[in-house]
Image 1 (tube, rainbow, N blue to C red):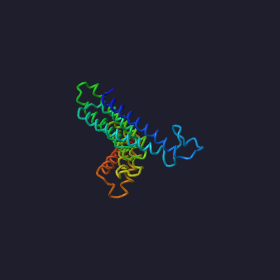
Image 2 (image 1 turned 90 degrees about the vertical axis):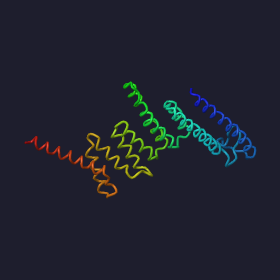
Image 3 (image 1 turned 180 degrees about the vertical axis):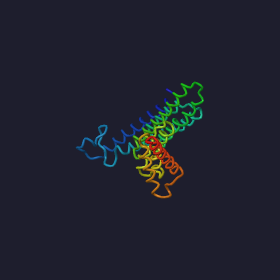
Image 4 (image 1 turned 180 degrees about the horizontal axis):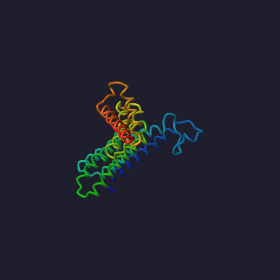
Length: 254
């Protein structure tokens, strides 16, 4: 186990021990002041909790410890980044995300470091087979970080958007990207361009081109704010393909 991970584990154990000890004596003091209770769920470690004093306070204290440890580990990750130790970074990132699963910044940055930075770094490898294997590994590692973040934060438009970008740019999964952009667009705080992004990707999916075209035309009809150069170019390309197909059919009949 890397030295940083060992230190992190010891630090976490120490914090948990401190807070557990604090909780024990706090519960004892609260129990001495409280009136007898017949409710079993009000008892903790053999002592009854005074109303307003209980698990919420301990949860808050433990959350503070987890946040502090996560921030400390994140600083260590930047040290590893300077050394380009990608695998060790990934291990620490997993710990940070476990400590703070609802901080989307951690999942988002972990995905970026793996899918973009680490995958680009291995392109210098002269062994083509090994290079392709490692590149794919880091891209999938980045994808896993985003999907883990989404599972804990299903209301995050940003994480869905960045999953769409990864599927589009790194894996060329146009259908998966379209679905991710659609999910991102449906959530609060979504960027206005996400509907266009989803439609663009559908036009790249065999059998879904017409659906993509229809969605682009619907966006076009919404007004000038939607008529971006990419949207206009996509519409033109699709119309040219359709006209070319019609001409080919006519020539075949002749």
